Image 1 (cartoon, rainbow, N blue to C red):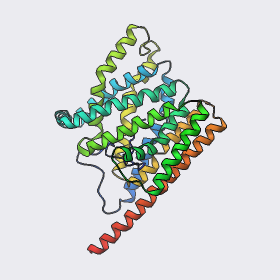
Image 2: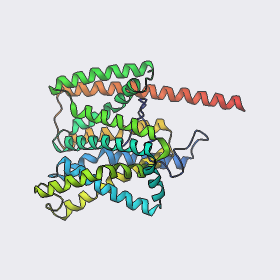
Image 3: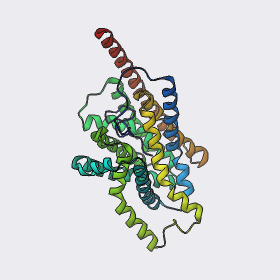
Length: 339
């Protein structure tokens, strides 16, 4: 899945989200109009629902394996982004991003992180481990908090410390349940957390479509080689499973880009706190798809482990809401003082 948490651990959107060509989400100011809020909610829900239903898409792409699915996703996403850039006449924006060495280096690193994330996620779904993939995105906000401490040397608030502590307990319970470290979940959480950190360093200098274009450009040679090798070894399914399968694989470019566009439209209309709450739609839907559609097993121990994870997320959400409320009160006080 492609939404990014704040490196400081707040489960919300970051500058890696799509922005308009003229800037980032609207600064603090007058409250958004009711129509904007409604539209923002619809766009946000649409983005996270699409991300949450990705397991169904990957499931119907079988017997294609993870490598083939991700390789096609990279190639067709790049072509779809090229079409969007042509329509919006934004080739100059892309050229500027490619010329900026610091931006390009950051996006190249982000590309390899998201490749690890996509491969792990697709492997999990296509090998009957979709429950564990949903776990990865449930614990992702906790990993982002941890990265904030380890990488940015941030000081955590009490509820954040409590959430991280409970998260460690959850990993212990789930390790016992699985009989091994839940490596799929941990790889997803850490690769996505680091991806968010890198993209946050880029900030609003690059919009989402330009960013996705650069990232897929970096990965495209590897993806093309993978597709050729699969074809030469008669392992590719792109042209061997009928026209429906062919067009479904080609649609991966649209399916990658559209939720990003929806998310960008939402981020420009809603407070970050609201978007932070909306992001739980995706792992919840992934979890439900794994249980109700794929019929994956959940032992008592795993239910307990997931319950502990949800407790940690509850603590993190309470901290987020408290902080947002305090900031709102402080802003109102500052406005009254300036009046």
